[in-house]
Image 1: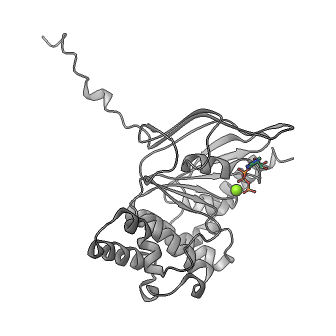
Image 2: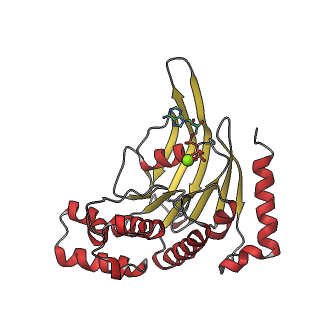
Length: 268
Ligand SMILES: Nc1ncnc2c1ncn2[C@@H]1O[C@H](COP(=O)(O)OP(=O)(O)OP(=O)(O)O)[C@@H](O)[C@H]1O
Ligand SMILES: [Mg+2]
């Protein structure tokens, strides 16, 4: 008889999303007024998933990412990573922003090793990690260079390597390629896709470039502004985004038009 067996059954071991957001609301208050930047935003990101958020300027993308990073608090709602409610910044999350946030006085290698140095990781171990990530982003030859000696694309490659070197559970990226010229942007997108396929990091990617979102992501949340809400979730068909040339295919362009019209419907 198994009727009295109170052990949880295997059925309960269902996969829980890496990130769970329920009704996240952010109200910015000034002396005179209150502004609802995010209004009951709910979403999930599974482990190893690449998920983007697109939407018009001011729809709350950066606010959402800062809340995920723990740099800002939400007004109401619930937001957890691996089942733990977010309560401030943590080493479980790596960040890459649009503007270069490298330490100008540190070399490429030292920038990449920064988090490991803080943690007191032994030198030989740090070197192995920075070697791995410099190779991953193709900067082995620039180990000793200072940020000022690098191009914009190279700086962002260091920023990505630095974030990944800390082995974060989630990589949070806010328009990381927004300041790059179109050609560099394209090659960075390909590089990021290759890195993601190899490292299988969970990525939350913010962009207002719809092509970029479709090319990189498995799912895209389309947002709307005033107030910032999720308008629709779009699942990107597998196999659509093999190479950069996919951007010229009929199915890619069709999807792009769909998302543009979703955003356009709500732009003021
Ligand atoms: N610290 C703040 N205080 C008051 N209002 C803010 C603050 N930060 C953002 N906002 C407002 O909240 C809204 C969302 O801003 P947010 O930067 O999150 O948008 P975004 O989608 O990232 O825009 P963009 O595409 O231009 O980067 C905007 O209307 C902005 O003015
Ligand atoms: Mg922003």
